[in-house]
Amino acid sequence: MVIYGINSILETLRGSPDRVQRLIIDKGKKSPRISEIVAEARSRRIPFSFEPSSALDRRAGGEAHQGVMAELTAFNYADLDEVLGSGPARIILLDGVEDPRNLGAVIRTAEASGADAVLIPSRNSCGITGTVMKSSAGAASHIPVCRVTNVARTIALLKSRGFWAVGLDMEGREELPGDLAELPLLLIGGGENRGLRPLVKAHCDFLFRLPMKGKVSSLNLSVAMGILIYSLLGPGAATDHRQGSG
Image (tube, rainbow, N blue to C red):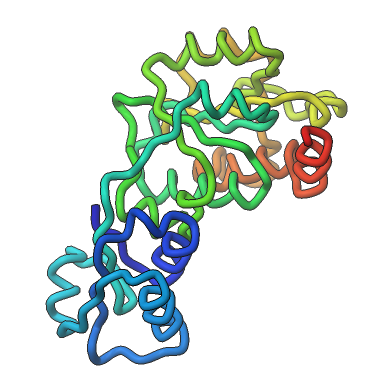
């Protein structure tokens, strides 16, 4: 896997340095943050080379690489059983998200809010790519991301372990019980075009609809999920549950 972008590479060097095989740096690009990347690479004895900007442009396929790229080993998806064994109480599940930028943005919000893991289907869904890593600003290196084979069965499994499932859906209600933030939560978002599938909705304990006061009938998926995540998880709630689990 090749990733690019200053933030995503810095966070990968800090969070998953063993995955970084080599760095490629634009020899005409100079900035304090690129110097920081070089220093991190040197301290961890990771090979790097300086190459013309045109070489990075070709490798990035038109994406904004910001003058630095990294070759990584394949992304190491977390095991759901191991994640659950650590006693998490806040999990995000995305069913059928196809846009890597949406996936990366949700992962970034999940990590920032203090969520414990992000789950994605192993089929009919975007996996972790260089674009996802860049869009997550490197957050995908700091939060477990698991692939699951069957979304409905995964929801049922988590509910059997005490989780409450909250789905984001246009048919939901605009208010949720105030005590949900104190419970083990599974927050579920659907694909960009189809939303939550009927079987997934049937497994949800609650369906939440964002209040829409203007003339636009919906929001971008990553924005909508960000609102749901911070409505129920928020930094305060995340801090409380992590302190209580120790």
